[in-house]
Length: 343
Image 1 (cartoon, rainbow, N blue to C red):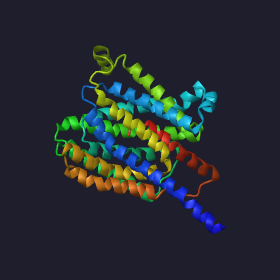
Image 2: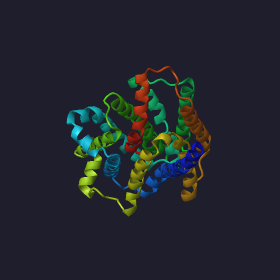
Image 3: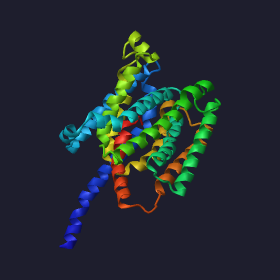
Image 4: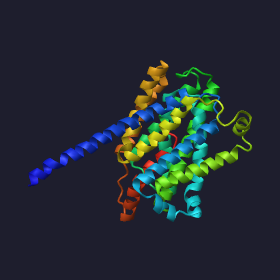
């Protein structure tokens, strides 16, 4: 009888594993292609605020879809309060709104591989802010990996900022409209992610509900900023969809699909970031005909090694049961945090 049970179990397990690998492949492809798609499909004339707001709408739709899929929509609606929402999601929402605007600016002024590698520095700033806010420690290997990541970012910044990188554009434009925006966005991403973890652990706030709240609050912040901002003047002068074409919707939709895929493979999401950089490099060469610069080739193995080591050697200090519970709840919040971010 025991042998029969063992025979019957593998098909279901193998079917689940095959499905997970399909999701992982699609998610890796989406992560790697997203910078290139955004760069090619969003024209320079497109107003940054309009593209960010469109992404926020897509994220709300994805988050609501996932909440309904889990069957929690009615319960969350009955338990929701305005004060609790603003306490948990208000500040991260404003931070993410600014971060996404900076990323949209950076997309247009950096090649896709350089952008993707510099964007990985958010790992360093997330570790920094989670230590400050949650006292979440890092292992010696993780600290070494973060130092390696920062070294790679400095190498890339010096190379691309000097005008000797792969883009061949004006060095001042690359530095001030490409490198600095993505690095500031990484700092903001680390801070916002830490605040989201705090809300998930301390306030026991659902990650997907936070996505909806942050998208709504962030959109309101962006709309309020258009009253005096240059983007607001452009919208009043040319219209909200100025510069948009049918293909402008593609990066918005792919980002939303990426959010759904993250929700499906949360437990395996850690392995995605290493492969996505290679995907970005290959796609950039295929579609743009542009090989990576010497600085990118030097930084790429450093970034991949840093991410691999950071994920392989987590801190293993003695934890009380409450800390273990927090760690488990934090794993469930990963998908919601990534879903909200511009990836």
